[in-house]
Image (cartoon, rainbow, N blue to C red):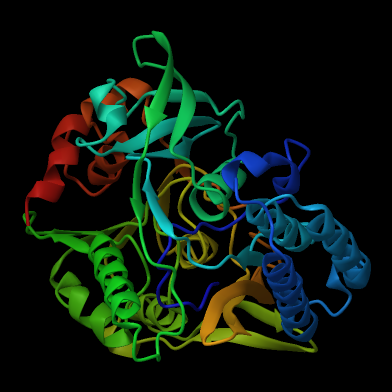
Length: 447
């Protein structure tokens, strides 16, 4: 699980590298018309060496899963040497890390000098990719793109569960574009081919936040944190006297916040915990929430880091533990702590899991901030490094597999378009509150 308390950029957990495309080949010189200066290339070599050392020092597997790290670094050096743009050089560093075929060991390039907002978001539902969010002020909305539209391809690439991370990483973090070409299929079966413009905002490159002239950088950083935190705020519905419904977009909470958020569940016969879209968060929040549901200590599994293995035990709450029914909603965007929580419910028969197959990204990673001194400026970049694996109490692993719900309930394209929520309706039915999918979706407007 990722211990980072905040992710400022739209970062996702990355899947295994397959043969759809390589990042080094997907970025071209057109993105960086100024080419590569001697300083640019020197900085790229320094970044490569920085991430190589971080992986060599902290990666959970000292054999690097059988890969020759030095050989991979030499290939990346050759690519940097031939790069015709900064974008290509950064892609070579990214490719170096992705060759490890690891969901969490990834390059974080320097902050970009432009901010790109595509105005729409894609996500998996079952085996298909759909538009799951649209900004009403975006060009996509003006051209009629809507939630529930199926994405057949984006810039020529077909988004799948195996490749979606690559598209998001390329378009959001490594090589933002002024627009994307999308092949769409509406819920009614209408095929469309659209060029969707993004909003591009120039911004000052982030240098050393401790420098006296870094006020703009610090303000931008604080604004990003505030926006990100707002999106991750839990939503609690108390309109049903015997059911507590909590939509929890993240485990980025303290133990005290978890206790406060769930303080009144003991007065309810059932808890419905909506972890759809929850990408994980803090270990302490996961432990606290699990501990609230068990009287005795719970052995979640084993935590296997480099050279050591420890048993992961969650402390129970004794007589204060919640004893009501538990329903857990998950989807293809549920990852890390949300997957561990859902699987614990299944292994102990403590709760029922409803929804879609989860992402399969539970290994623990740490963020390694790195920098390059360049005269008076400091170039900030970084890498995430997998530092531990998680083996569940039954000996199974979730990495690249995910959690299969007890009841697979997927919204159709028409459901998404109309704002219906069949998975929540299913959970409500199980706890004695039968509602249709349209009425269930409206509950989040009731606090």
